Length: 170
Length: 170
DNA sequence: GGTATTTGTCTGACGGAGCAACTATACGCC
DNA sequence: GGCGTATAGTTGCTCCGTCAGACAAATACC
Image (cartoon, rainbow over all chains, first blue to last red; front, side, top):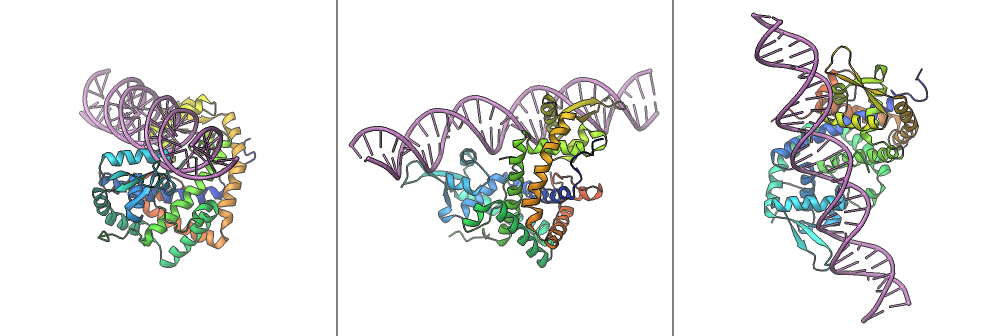
């Protein structure tokens, strides 16, 4: 016998499985559209985060903090996007260790190209699937979980964090 | 001016951002515990999926279908876990192209070690955060989204089957 | 001012995962 | 039985992201 200690069909698994499937389903849809515009999910996230920051720029470390990437991950994405002309590095005048990542006009344009389709997809597959009440309840629940699981996010004021690439660990 | 076409602070972003943060927050917590038992999230998933299958085995392709991995991804995880003695390959008698991945006793034991802690974490950070009503509503919403975004999963009866690979375009 | 510590970024080495190409087997059809 | 196609799995190549370590600049302490 092996029905030993643990029940592998615990309903909690199906609950979390639903969560995972819904989430990865959405991100896959999004990723497909990003790729039509030659962007990866990460690149989109970077672009978006920079675009909504004052002067379209962020220090490397701050960018890392706002995305799901490590600082060295950020270095590399920015390298790539710099090469493609979407982002450019700019020295920080007040701290010579730091550098800013700044969205170029080309970067802004690329972002503007992607946005409408992206918003549509979000509407179509996410927001529009639920009644307004349902949506509110969902967001409440998600916020509760988020606040529990990720206390930092609460502190820093604004939430808003689209698209962290699936983590798997650490 | 750049207030051009699109609004980067669209509330839908914050909605999806919440989704993302909650999900990755959870998976990170889980991953941390898995690593205490020298498993990655993927390895845990593989182990679990095999353990709940009849005779603790699954053909490679089926395993791929049930996880978020490609078939070549499965080949490699199974290689690794085979090397560690958690899984073993077994020839399929009826089709010599196929092989089964089978959980070894060591693999089952490892799984039994992880499960209690994992269930606790799920309870603590996910299920237990919500009132029963809230949980039901959440699951309803997630199911709706999942069914929309990942139609295959609905058909096959059992839940859990990520990875639709968007069909809408090349 | 001089030394120790911390902070911001980059780099080398590494591992995981996907795609495309390949091999081997099974199956359909004549 | 023999040929063409489909299917199962593996392997080579490449990309992407992490970690650990290096280095430079800022800051703290004296």
